[in-house]
Image 1 (spheres, rainbow, N blue to C red):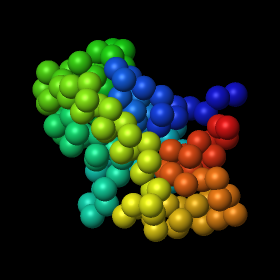
Image 2 (cartoon, one colour):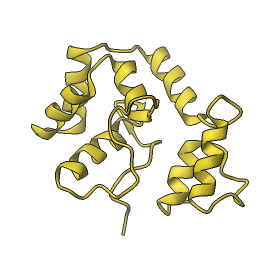
Image 3 (cartoon, one colour):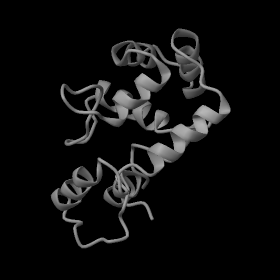
Length: 141
């Protein structure tokens, strides 16, 4: 059985993390989002959801509303481009590289270490990014 939330490295329109957020929105609306998952923008905390919304210049509440209206992931991303901003290929490459390495020797490293400890994965030296942590927690290789 696959996990109900896709990997952060899965792409929609070439963009990391976006599809994962859509999965969380849909699961939350159905009351099925697993406990412990951040959803949206949390005061005082820079979540991946917050970063995606700022990158695309859309409000999370509006993204949630649009997602729940239905449509494909690609249609929802196009809505973001039309109502926020459309990054070019180079901006997406920089975004993807930044997000893919988040937690590895950067200001988020201490948060990654804490979340690894909370998940009982402190012994896993191979987990050096949040993407790797998410995949490990969700049973992906």
